[in-house]
Image (tube, rainbow, N blue to C red; front, top):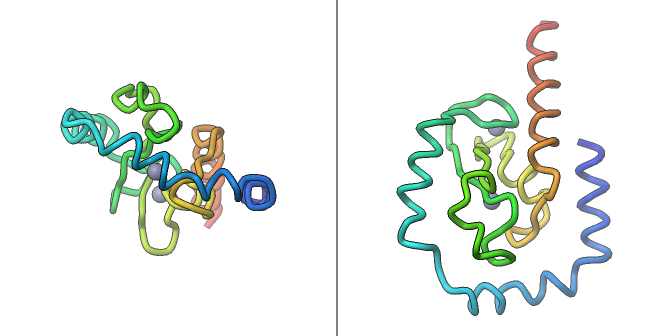
Length: 127
Ligand SMILES: [Zn+2]
Ligand SMILES: [Zn+2]
């Protein structure tokens, strides 16, 4: 998690100006594709657990490269990862968006989620 916090700090100092522009960019891009709900359901059926904790509650399909950055990857399953919004962990928020802003994103989300999962499984085993 220290790596994530460092990432978030770095983003806060270097990315503020870019994140101020996000609402405008999002407005320019418009909403989600009408095909998104069906793909989202399919991904959740195929992968019904959070990739960062293995949990099954409050799952969300997160875009690794956000739609407001690259609209062409909205319906690319390889650009999607399942993360939870469980009240205490909020992996979608902390791992997917680095706990900073919904317009921020974590380019290494897959590796970070895998690391979180390994650590949590290890902690559970050592109980
Ligand atoms: Zn989770
Ligand atoms: Zn997300």
